[in-house]
Image (cartoon, rainbow, N blue to C red; front, top):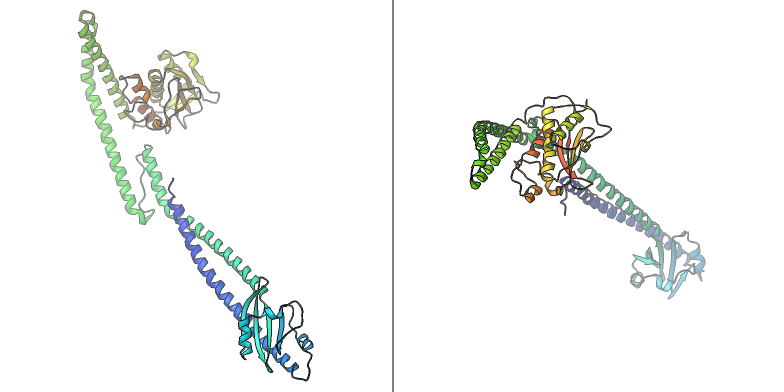
Length: 447
């Protein structure tokens, strides 16, 4: 499972914090508003009930009063219902209420004892407030006030506060994303610098004054880059010096071996075989020294000149005995390129030699729009090996399978160095027709 990135974690933390804060504020606001609205509604209902109770009490004071007419004289509107309990009987001005069950027994008992009270209930799924007021002559007056409209108001308020909480959380995530993007920008600069150094640009450095908080990191990075550049320079100089010093004794050994090789027919079989091995190893040693010298010179700037690349590729193929029909020039390929002739010729030659030695022979040599390609008929290169096959002294599985010991393991590394010197790169992919396809990209080389 891929770990969650720092930016995503910080954004999630901001969103969670904003959501928690907005939820708490919304909850407190909702409860405060709810309690205030209910308290105000209860006060209003109690005042109205006391007023109506006074009217009913006055209407019942005469002889043989008309209870129904008294109740109908009240202006209660559509959200209030009145009940009167007098002489053991329930009176209502409408027939839509079950008077004997509408008022909770606890409230009836309290009112019968001469105490006024109020209680919240639910009637037919809707909230209501029942206020009871004792009247003179052992009568009790009740008003049932519907709270449905208040409940709808509170539901709307809850939806609004929930939407606000979600928007605040989204805003928190956006702020977190922006903050992390701004905070990680210096680290992105460090990562870009590291990639440039990995690509071969050892002059890349960081400016400590750009981000004062990361001055120590910038200084450490620059010091590391300086040490790396010095180390690579020492390694190049060492390889160049050793290779140069080895050339003289190698030439002497090669001359001596050549003399012995010419008299090989006069030697016994065992000695002749030893001379053959000696000559082959001297040739391999000479190739290794030449490759090391080439790598040591790879950091020098390219000597660009106008080169007719199709003709150069044709000459390289002809020098290796390849048929002329093997060379392909794409229609969009320029005839003249501005490149280092020696480097490009050696890089292309190394790819062709690699295909001959390990890839079953080249099947196509292609000159395209800013690139060179060599297809072979070998087993191809596994995806896991494609990144490392251009490293120094790395030999692919095909070389091990063939038991080949004549290669130096530097041919493809030289190809990569020459491509990088031109600002390009060397890659290997799968050939659609089978085998491997080695490619050199040379950007900015068209005239």
